[in-house]
Length: 222
Ligand code: SF4
Image 1: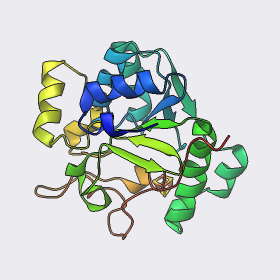
Image 2: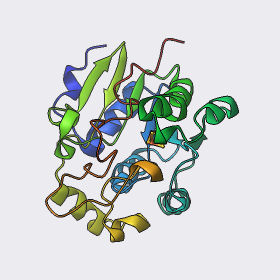
Image 3: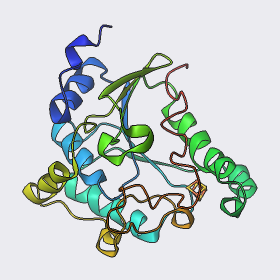
């Protein structure tokens, strides 16, 4: 299928087009983090029954797990799917964030998500260029191993995100008030300081900037 008709779309229009073109073959992935409410609100407006995959690494902040339930109810999402690492992988990853963050992310994030999204031909995520690093040149549509990766908010800046929160009266992740602007697992996330990029608090002090779920060729193949 040609994707050229999608190239100029973003936000809700892009989600609607993908939901139509890939009906039954599209899923959303969400961390239910600091800015996730915006993408999820747009998804809910298009189709609240779209599958939304939430990866619980077993190392999340309690606030994230609670926020997931709050957002799910507020937005009326009816198909949130919680995926977790296997018991064996969780055992192998015990305290691994202290010594090998790449392996820990592989076991707690990439493996379970790979299983969860297998067979889906389009994956919608909340990445944005404004978050910098590998996301600097992010497009709204990318092709990866035959799977269409869709980032409807790729060209949204922080002001647009904030305006959407206000306009739609969206609940905030509880940790945002403590200075967290990008929220992952508790051992690998700290609040950001003034002037830092939103993701500077992720794996701070290491060269790592992505966990791998957006860079690995996940989806379809089934
Ligand atoms: S973000 Fe940290 S704790 Fe979470 S899976 Fe990656 S290394 Fe492990």
